[in-house]
Length: 249
Image (cartoon, rainbow, N blue to C red; front, side):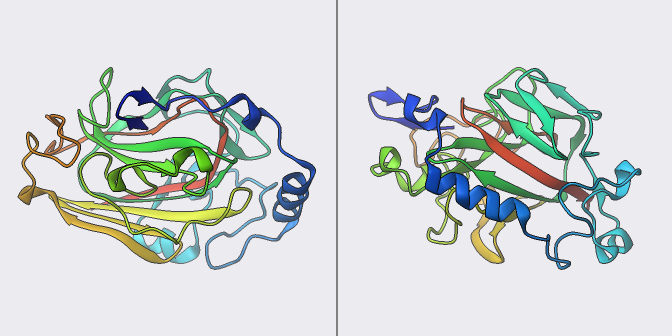
């Protein structure tokens, strides 16, 4: 989610609707690459017949991870199912909305990969309440193209990986638009940790944060929720996701 004093940045500029020839070439090159064995066990155009193992490494299967996306359908998801589509084994936000798991989760390790378009804005809701703004009635882990000129003057707690409005993330570890990123969200009680491309960018104990005295000076009544839904929070821009998996703790 993206807010600034005096304006709301939920929609992308019209220019984002079309990628330039240079970016198209980058996307083509990225799509043609073989997925590294370290984070995948199949190429992007192949989907396992078993939903529980799609996008999982053998190690993750042994550790108890399960897939949340079968690469073919939106089975297991609820909410704005019209704003997300499946394309070539990818879950694509276009233009999006809020797409939540059918199940609630308390403590977990949530892993996924994503690819941004220029200026893209999305988010991951965790321990969220349905029908409410996940950034306040739960938590929103920001997904944002930090490099976009339109986002040059945001508050620290609004950039990628931040617990929106509450805890700012370390910057400089996000790959450029058109390239894939891997992210892990670890939630164990009040301990929230976000790892982007192998680097920890948020490591917070939210029990020490007053939900009525946060960095954005907004009330966050759901900050200390014990459980809730996990969801992708689209704000009008195309973002692609793959290898979405979770392990309950």
